[in-house]
Length: 265
Figure 1 (cartoon, rainbow, N blue to C red):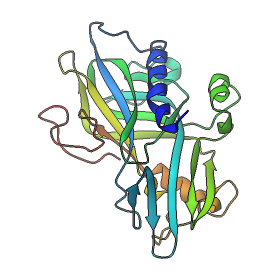
Figure 2 (figure 1 turned 30 degrees about the horizontal axis):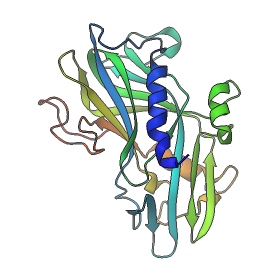
Figure 3 (figure 1 turned 180 degrees about the vertical axis):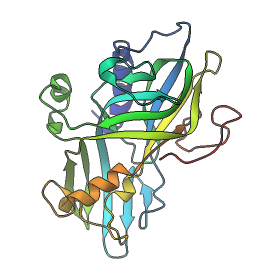
């Protein structure tokens, strides 16, 4: 199967699976609205010599050249948190949070810079200002996921490409819960129409040291000297915002007219 076809097919499968989520409700029920979640690669303005071509991300710091050909992440337990809530707790069915997807599921980023792999669920109406999720190191209990993705045993992220012309495979077992403030509150009403949130991941900053120079991704694999550096870069590379036109870029006209512009954290 061509890699480009995986995202849309997986999205269809996940939409069907969402019907089984504890807090998700069926389409058309009173007090709910369709909310979609998309994933994309952000611009890479902080990275050295970043450029996109032919579905690959190329970085050049004047000495080394890094080409990222594929990036895949395992995510789990995505939840939207209501304004002024104190946090989400999936184990007790917290009413302040809307469970969106339990997972684990695989996100395959479009390295050409597009928004991909949209999933959709019916979410209770309300105002949400935070999205919570987990970058998930797979476990033995993830039987179905590992049966479909055997190369992801005990890892959460996999990147492939070349560094100075040599092939590399980077993997990490980072197991990180992420709380991401939305730049503007996500206002979901029965009359608002379908709403989309995009999570963008700036992969171009992952393999860059504090001096702005590229590092060989192979030196960031488990037990290698740049492991901690790259893990920290990954944690700070994710942003999220309302993106109703599905273009992967925040605009003033996305969402409600009284939304204020801002930057997620």
